[in-house]
Image (cartoon, rainbow, N blue to C red):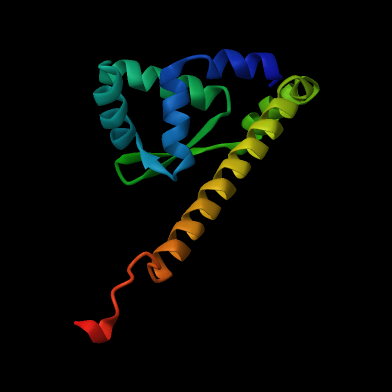
Length: 135
C-alpha cells in the first residue's frame, strides 16, 4: 500500500479513532462499536463498514475468539504512511524542534522560580526586629 492510499484510509476521523483505540491494545468488535457509536453517533453497521475498510486495507487484523472478533492494529501500513512523509519532514521538523526548545526553556524557568521561592520561604525574615528575649 502506498502512502497516498494510506492517507485516503486515514483521512476519515472514525477510522483514525478506531486505530487510536487499537493502538492501546486489542479490542473486540463490540467494544470498538460501543466507543465509536457513543463518540460519533453512528450505527453499528456503519462501524462494521469502517472496520471492514481497515481490515481490507491491512491497517487492522482480526481473529476469532469464541463468538467475538478481536481486532488489532497492523503496524506495517502505518509505518509505510510515516515513511511517505519523510521527504516533507524538513518543512515542519525545525519548527517542532524550536517548540521543544521553548517548552524546555519555560519548564526550566518555572522550576528555577519555584526553587527561588522555596529558598526565600525557608530563610528567616530579617525585617522582624523583635528580640525573642524581650517577650
